[in-house]
Structures are given as C-alpha cells and as structure tokens.
Amino acid sequence: MSTDPINNYHHGDLKAALVKAAERLIANKGIDALSLRSIATKAGVSHMAPYAHFKNKSELFKSVAASGYVKLTNRLKRIKKSADKSDDLVLLYGMAYIEFATKNPQLYKLMLRQTHPDLSTNKKTTKKPVLLTLSNGDKSLRDASKKTYLLLRDCFVDSANDEHEASVQAQGAWALVHGVASLLITGQIVIDPKSSLREFLETVTKGLSS
Image (cartoon, rainbow, N blue to C red; front, top):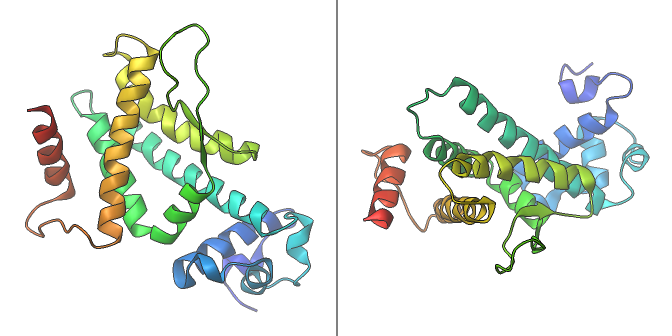
C-alpha cells in the first residue's frame, strides 16, 4: 500500500485529500492538467468520488484557491507573531507574499483567477469607491482571501487618517508586491544574486518615497 498521505486519508477527510492532490498536480503539471478525474487518480479514489464534494471543476478551483489563501494567511500570521516591535511588518509581509508566489507560481495564478474585486463603497463617505476586499460567490474563498488582505491593511490603520486611507495604502503595497512577484515569475526582472529580496524591496520603496 502506498505511504503517500494523499492515499491514506481518514474517513471524512476526502475533500482535504482531493485539494492536496490538486495542489500537487498544479505544481507538477500546471493548471490545465487539473480535472476531477485527474485528482481522483492522484488521490487514489474512484473517478466519481470527487463529485461528493465538487459539482464541477469550477468548485474544485475555488477550494484549491481558498486553500492557497489560507496557507498564505497562516504564513503572515506566523510572521506577525514572531516579529519584533521594531520590524517593518509591511516589508516582511511583502517578502513573504513574493516568496509564496514565486515558489508556487501555478497555485498563485489560480488564486488570482478565482478572486474578483468588490467595488462597493462605504455609504458614509462621498469618496470614490475603492477595492476594500476580494470577493467571490464562494464563501470559503471570499473569507480566505479577505483575511489575507486585512492582515496587510491592519499595518496601515494606526498611521492612516481613516479606514479609507489605510485601504488605499494597503492596496498600493499589495499592487507593488503583486507586480514584483508577477515579473519575477515570468522572468521579466531578476534580482541580483548578490542582493537579497529584502534589500531589493527596501531599495524599491526608498525610491518611491524619495
């Protein structure tokens, strides 16, 4: 019998096993190789077994994307817990985000494809609508993506004049690290091997504020 944990899930853990199988398929073969049949084979279950949890491939994609956001959020939470008060959490979060994206490029691409902007505005303000959260019809995905964003936004709350400003600042930071991650993944920029990711981001942000 295989010792692969995917093939030895406990009763009631089939959905988690299928998501884990999907993550491995994405990492090894890319998003296009993902199907309910292929993850069933990878998980060592019947081809019909995934339908107990996913009606179609779209639902599977949403669950895999949500799992990705949970992993990213947990990483950020660990950083926040271990960080010294003098540490720049925005910088540490940015580094973690880029590292996650570049180490999991296919999963990262899927996560972004499955989340969509919520352009709703705060009725108490006359300011223009801004992207406050990521949302989707799937609640687990909406909640998972929102938690990642709120951790970043919280870094700006104390220094901002109001919630709107904090949200805009968080969006700017998010846009920056997303852009860097995307360009690194596609090979359009390369960080000097003599420099660290931290040094790269510090130089970038210093240039923007000067």
